[in-house]
Every structure is written in structure tokens, then in C-alpha cells.
Length: 259
Image (cartoon, rainbow, N blue to C red; front, side, top):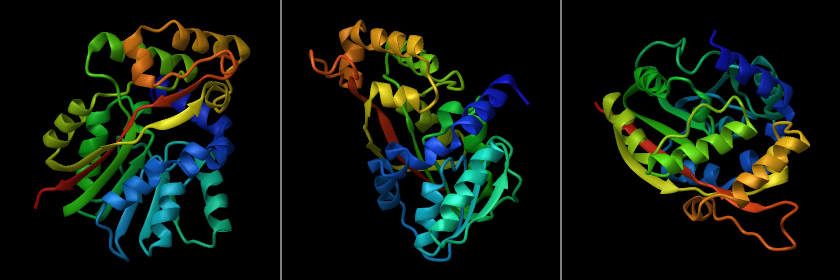
């Protein structure tokens, strides 16, 4: 296992409960946007990869799908299972790497992955694996952080994310995702913005940032070039410097496997 994957397991294993209770993950508008954009049917075989707190898996199960929730981190799976069982829903849980899916080809009607691929060392490999296990005509639904088109701005945003969470690898541009889908035999059918409003202190505390790191993150936002402030929709005043409101730019991306 690579060092970054060990870092992912450490980070999410330590803070697993935070991702069950996180408003961004539990009630973030990207979840409803994702579900509305996918033409789902009851009984569909569904795989929710990097399930985190299990919110996407739960939503699919509540609509009658046969759901498998998977994650690299065992503690994350155990926490998600406890949460979903309290909702009286049946979901199966499997621990596996999103870049090495242990299911046969052409098996699932739907694969989902929400707010996770920026932690994957090889996103094109993940997309290929998702495409492989989908049935012809099956659907892939992804939500993830995206970066600005220009390289310097993308570098700045990814450095900001990496400072907050060392298990962050890279947030790709929307056009990169289009290329990944195309190379994997998927046709992108829908994209939409899904900005996630945050308070910097709360966002940083979710992964256990210490005060020094929080001050550095605050400085990166306040001293950022204007293009970065615009990208993050940074709002500052004398009353908000203690906990700066900003928005993380995400995209909802839907693709269909070619017949």
C-alpha cells in the first residue's frame, strides 16, 4: 500500500465520526443534486465507493436499491454501518481500494462516489475500474472538488487543500474529468456546479488541524491573489476574521457506460 493510502486510512480512521455528522457530507446540496441527476430505478445494483459516512449509500438504499458501500478505511466502514443500521436500512459493506475493485465486469447498474476522488493517487485508474464494473448502459455519478483551469491557480488551491489535509492528492479540472470519462468508455451526460459553503475553522477542525495550521490556512485565504479569493468566494470583514466564510467549488458529474 502506498504512503498516501496509509495517510488516508489514518486520517479517516481517526476522524470517521466527524464525516457521519458533517453537514457538508450529510446534508450538503451536492447529495440531492447527484440523486436528481441520475435516472435511478428500484432494485438497481449500486456500488457506493469511498462511502465515507455512508450518506449516499443510505439515500440509494432508501429508494429501494441493492447497495454495497465500500471504503479503503475499515473504521470508516464500521462507523457508516452503525449509522445506516440506525436508519433501519440494509446495506452491505466491503473494504477495498477504489483503484482495485473486487467485483466482476458488467455487474452494477450504478456506481457512485461523492467528495472522495481528490484523495485517490490514480484517478484515471479509479474511473476505469468504475467503468469496468458497470453494466453496458450503466451510470456513474461523481461529486468532487474541482480546480480552476489555470495551472498557477490550480496549484494554489491544491496546496491549500493539502495543508489542511495531508491525505489530499489533487483536485482536477472539469475538463480533466471529461478526458478521464472518455478514455474509460464513458459518455459524460450531465455536469453542474455544487459549491460547498464552509467556515474555515470548522472545516479545518474536521480533520484535526491544530491552531498553527488553522492560522496558516487563514493566511492563505486572506493573502491569496484575487483570482483565488474569487474562486473560493471568500467573505471577510472585521466580524468574520476569526472564522472566514468561503466556498469549496465542487462539480456533480454524471456519465453513462456505452453499450
